[in-house]
Image (tube, rainbow, N blue to C red; front, side):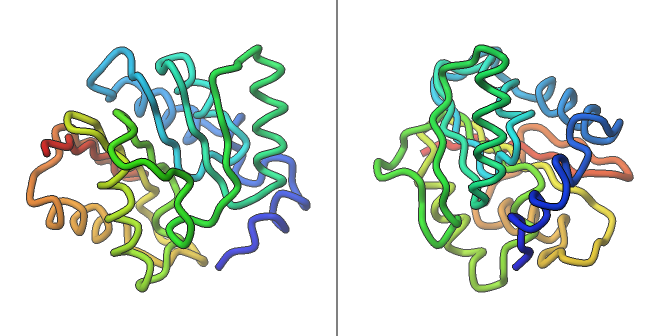
Amino acid sequence: MTDFDALYRQHSDPWQIRSSWYERRKRELLLACLPKEHYRKTLELGCGTGEMTAQLAQRSTAVHAVDLSPIALQRCHQHLKAMGIHNVHTSCVRVPEVWPIKEPCEFDLLVVSEFAYYLEDTEIDGFIEGCQRALEAGGDWLMCHYLPSFHDRRQDTQWLHQRITDTLNKEPIVTHSDEAFLLNIWRQTD
């Protein structure tokens, strides 16, 4: 597993989340693809330093943001505080080994962006089951992941998204694919 704390210690913004065109474009497209204008309760897995979290907080009554790096979460808190955002709760846990929520069917939006391709083969089933349990009926599950290969990827993006389609036995309600990333949204029906 990638040592994310080491990356955050070496660089304040290891993936240029705030400055790169790719990241800014992906964030704007992700937000534009959300089928609903407002969500009651959002779960974001892999929040990093909180750039997307801040945007999701403006579209949600409450956000639960999760990351396994305490350094990233500290920066996320600082970013949200500087923006005057107070409707975000955070958890520092390693998903899917530990789930940040106890109650099933709690969220109407689940956002997983640039995270799930770091999971090991043995973690995929637990990840999918946890995501399904987290969503209430009618809830939206958004997955967005980089397509090109890179050195510490554990899962192929297209395979991962197809695995979710196959497990849910339903096609996404939203799909965007280009040379850089794949974005899908599935709606929980039961």
